[in-house]
Amino acid sequence: MTDFVIYLGDVITANNIMIENASLYWDEAISPARNRGIPWASVFGNHDDAPFEWPLEWFSTPGIPPIRCPPTTSSHSGEEECSFKGTGRLELMKNEIKNNASFSMDGPRDLWPSISNYFLQISSSDDPKSPVAFLYFLDSGGGSYPEIISSCQAEWFRTKAEEINPDSRVPEIIFWHIPSKAYREVAPKSGIPKPCVGSINLEEVAAQEAETGIMKLLRERTSVKAIFVGHNHGLDWCCPYKKLWLCYARHTGYGGYGNWPRGARIVEITQKPFSLHSWIRMEDGQVHSEVVLS
Ligand SMILES: [Zn+2]
Image (cartoon, rainbow, N blue to C red; front, side, top):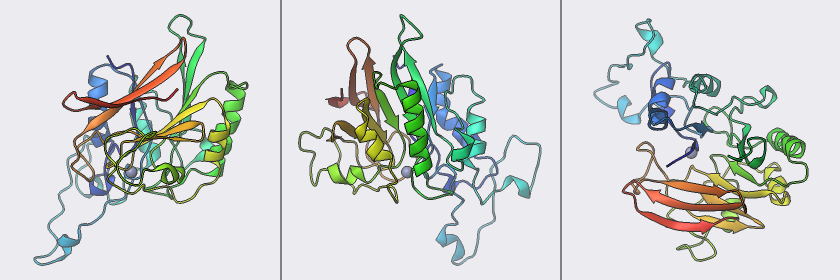
């Protein structure tokens, strides 16, 4: 039984969506969790608020095909239902958090336009006040602004972590979409030799544009156990980096590039003693790439 789902960004490919309110597609994408009554949280990827990209072939003979904008639930009709600019992160998030089962947040205002920055506490089932782990979610940008985790976001993480977990007693787990440059340092050259664990290594790491300090903070905090990212559909490994683990999830949805079989990364947390196990479960139920992260 799944207790919680984390959507690691690129929930929709907005550059293919010519519609005023892309939240309609977002709602559809998260509906498998919602319909099963499973709570979830999400972060943004580079495709979620990307503007519509006109296909080049539309501009060849016999000319641009007539624009057909998908119907929306709004009472408006006509041209205002078409959108070439994408639906903004803030709007997508505000719509998502209308769902009671969503634990996503639109983050501190002083970090905008970066939106999906927040943390969640996992509590003990015996004692709801006792934290078992803190999950941190960061917006790694892309789409409407550069692919980056800014120094302001790093500072927000540092301040928050020191405030709620001053002695680093509680383990911390980190989630964002676009891998940091550190992923390139640990990426296996070919195959996936130990100590890395995974099943596909068929792409170059497509890293963020710059590194402004978040990785230094994370590797120096003893309580940080692992970072999980999405973005590269052809990579699903976990590799150690200093004293933490850098992990990819597994491409789950049917949008985006690549035809590698779909799956999902499972993360299992136990409390006493604390442990963090992970593996990948494929769409057909097959399980592989089990790894102990803490
Ligand atoms: Zn991406």
